[in-house]
Image (cartoon, rainbow, N blue to C red; front, side):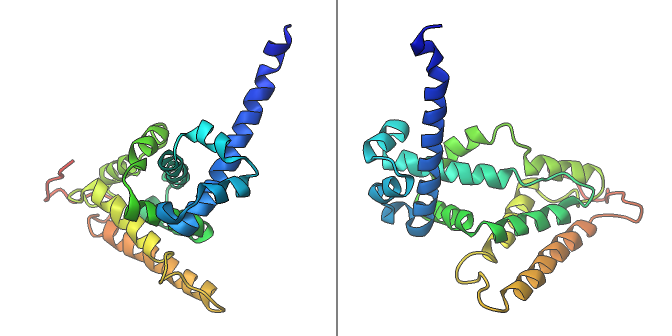
Length: 214
């Protein structure tokens, strides 16, 4: 087998590892400083890779920011949606994810403030992941969510509740942080559970006196 063919997989692996290091460094940098304050030079130092290679892999700074945000959205989208615990359980898992990934929350908030450019790339990366809106529709059919609620609006509401509790200035700090996290986690679950229960009849049947917009 020719050397150039034999070496191709190894070169591909090296390139993948380099891209992964760059992306990890970019996520840390942009989470700390946003797009405007982030510096490619610091990303190169964090990744142990020269700046020219970053541009070769990702193009310009905005494309690198878009890739960093898209990877964060992909992680968020991978939080398990399905389960017998319904929307309240999903909300609880989202809350826990954001508690464990503060840099992801910061990066997503920076993306909301500074650019909508990552949306197209994020959509492409999320195409094979389960959509929470689809889960809401199934829950509505099963009588677990009121049929008159818009699925997208409910997803945005749950995401917003979970995110705001883990973003400055509301993210708990200090010796009482754990207790505050537990209290808020229970509040998020209870709020979503109450909202879901508002549309269910005893036995799990959804109310039929209100039309569904879906």
